[in-house]
Image (cartoon, rainbow, N blue to C red):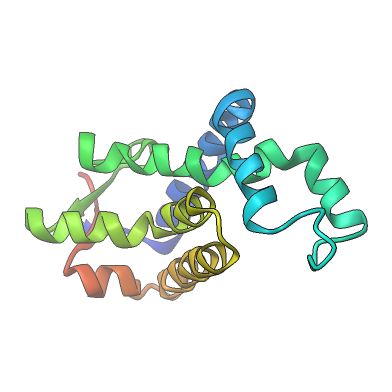
Length: 167
């Protein structure tokens, strides 16, 4: 099998992100609302000592159920990988992850950090955990940048896996 191109991998990621957006819209009344309520507690929105004052909380209040529910929807999309061996985007673009089972599990934890970091932070409900969760998500995104330059991502390296194109 040949190594997958950066464009194909980016397309798979964008397809997963788009599907997560659709799922987040569908879940706004349930999990999105719950995560938005947790964000009010964790970020101290509306508190006198909160940095979240003015127009920003008002805008987030209008779309908060979607914004705060999106990481959970993305986590659900990412959970397809350990259950089926692929995500919807990877399946549509013909990608496959090559590596031993222990490496595949490690890869799943690393690659889904972009979703479970913020989810865990909001679920625990403290500003510190939300900040750490967002930093974990940011690090996960940064770790994927080498793919654009046709190099293995940090996730590929740390998990000892490779993304290949199915014949």
